[in-house]
Amino acid sequence: MKKRITSININKTKKPKVEKDVEEFTAGDDCDEETALAEFANPVPWQKIEAEGFDCDYALLFPKEEADILFRKLEEEVEYATGKEAQVQVFGKVYNIPRKQATYGDAGLAYTYSGVKRFACPWTPTLEHIREATTKSTGQTFNFVLVNRYKDGLDHMGEHRDDEKELDPLCPIASLSFGAVRDFIFRHKDSRGKNSQQYIEPVKLELAHGSLLLMNPPTNTYWYHSLPIRKKVTTPRINLTFRRIVMRGKKCIT
Ligand SMILES: O=C(O)CCC(=O)C(=O)O
Image 1 (spheres, rainbow, N blue to C red):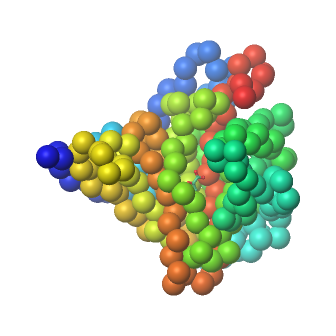
Image 2 (cartoon, rainbow, N blue to C red):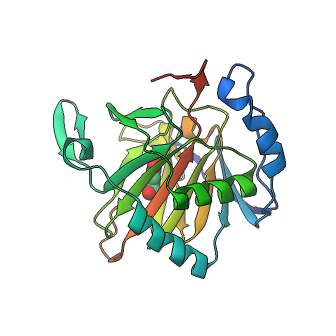
């Protein structure tokens, strides 16, 4: 008999909680003061979404007119990976990624996922602007962004966790969405596959144009997330996941 857990709480709150940085992260040294100054300079009405081991905050960060402009600017500025850079290897087989991807961030940073190491391009003005707006609303600083562009509802992202070793485990991942509204689904790690021992209800969200979803720790430890295919979606969407990559003695651990 599978155990059934179905409690999901959605509450309105004023601000997400800010975790304190741990001392050994040299990247955080000059960030702390900046963070304190920037903290909640732009308060937005947050919705808190909670379940077992799940803690997210959701808000509409940009009104439609501003989100439209940002979407257009991102379309002009972001340069997506092509050729081998747009492929991943899974169990030795090479696949084209079912979307476009780009990585931007502070100089020298790199991020490895699905076995591929991606170096950060220098911030574009629009990515920098969105990063600052995100910091002002969350009190968190970010040094890297993964950009995903979905041309329509056939482009998608499979189930995974953002639990790579180079990510600061105390920093939430801030996911900004522009363009088509898409479903975003979380599944608990113990509730996947035929032989799972318990049923934990998935958390299903709709990510709107101009929205910010803050995935707080320990969400990425316990929950997988995906952006499934939605054939009825005919327009593009751009998603930015701002992250904090851990630096030790100025060296990025990858
Ligand atoms: O496009 C999305 O909302 C999903 C992005 C995502 O899952 C990721 O960057 O890890």
